[in-house]
Amino acid sequence: MPDLPSPGASYPVTPRNKVRRLHERARYDHASVHAILDSAMLCHIAYVIDGMPYCTPTAFWREGTHLYWHGSSASRMLRTQKPGLPVCLTVSHLDSLVLARCGFNHSVDYRSAMCFGTAHIIDDLDHKARALDAMIDRFYPGRNAELRPSTTQELKATMVVGMEIESAAAKVRAKGVGDEEEDYALPIYAARFPVRQVIGAAEPCPRMPQGVAYPPGLAGFRDGRRLDEIMLESHHRLYGDTTD
Amino acid sequence: MPDLPSPGASYPVTPRNKVRRLHERARYDHASVHAILDSAMLCHIAYVIDGMPYCTPTAFWREGTHLYWHGSSASRMLRTQKPGLPVCLTVSHLDSLVLARCGFNHSVDYRSAMCFGTAHIIDDLDHKARALDAMIDRFYPGRNAELRPSTTQELKATMVVGMEIESAAAKVRAKGVGDEEEDYALPIYAARFPVRQVIGAAEPCPRMPQGVAYPPGLAGFRDGRRLDEIMLESHHRLYGDTTD
Image 1 (cartoon, rainbow over the protein chains, first blue to last red):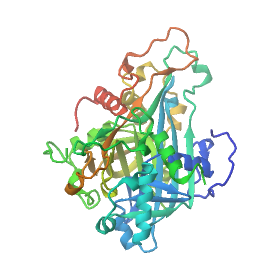
Image 2: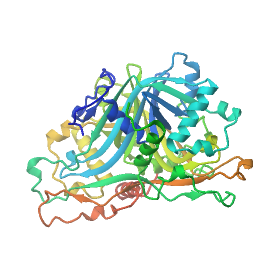
Image 3: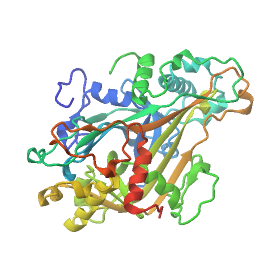
Image 4: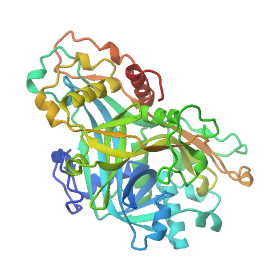
């Protein structure tokens, strides 16, 4: 993947997002960055308060080159930062454990994306309502239309944060075991263990009235399926099969 | 889990690690924080360069109240920061998707831990060698003894970073669907989808000589097993079944 050409639009390479360590694994094109983002539900957000770093996991989603997230503890900081808060939003997928013939070549296969920008609170209630509807449908196709509508009180109690991606970098390792040429002959066990995040069978709420059907929009949520594949499908259902 | 008493030692609660949002989900005791850390291989590390936040995923491990990690891009920053670099190291496990009867009550079950401290480069070669041996054995029991020993050149090319945990907070949600009392009667599908990260069957390196046996230390690395359980077992194998 790191050796393929990069068609389409790319994020600018700046001192902030330029990958320095193992830079041959880096990609800056929208398609590579967005595919990693859209395959995830959770990200980790780094931000600075009084000069100190914080790293918070939260649910997020992408709309074009804009990212949204929800209920971060950075929110209280944002209230007092009128120009917005610089953040780094990172997504990572662990794809395998790599056991090589020496400690130095032990590794993991992974896909990760770091996105840099300035976070703003979405205060406008209409914008916030649209964003939250999109959030639900982005994860669970068609679900929003099935729900009890949000109350104004619920809308006001929810923090939605938005950020335009100013720069971004993806980093991918997908090569499995890679050892020094002279080490392959050694009688040492070496292997790749694939890793995947999967969902289990739905556990329906026991307090549902009788006769409530399984929603057709959740047809893809089958026992044992990879969450990254489900999330990417759900994103395509709402926003189309586009990486820009 | 958030309602249980907290036996044993705890991390101090300071303005930095005090959980403000949904604080009823917070735990500060070593046992809760360490169990979340020891069940993971990857963390996300937030740090500040020139006032801007960065968030990097990397492999890490715990030894007592000390954390170590490896090859972070924060390393180049650390070289110039003699007093050390403040970081926030965060681990999160996604345990389920929670689909409720309104958007507001959609959620996820999760376990997360945030650890605050000051990172230092481990430059002493003996200390670094011991740390890297521990890293391998912490993930893969007994593996270090089976490997081709590291060369001095490999040791020098590897960055190891250490940090004493100054404060920490764990946050756990494990309640599945929770709706407003008046919403349970609505004819809306609600369910919890469990999420788990699992390993697949080993894919042995095709360049191994004939007759290399599967290492007994990897007996727990079986197709379909949860990675968090494997990681916790491996940690116990090296450091004992202790949470302090």
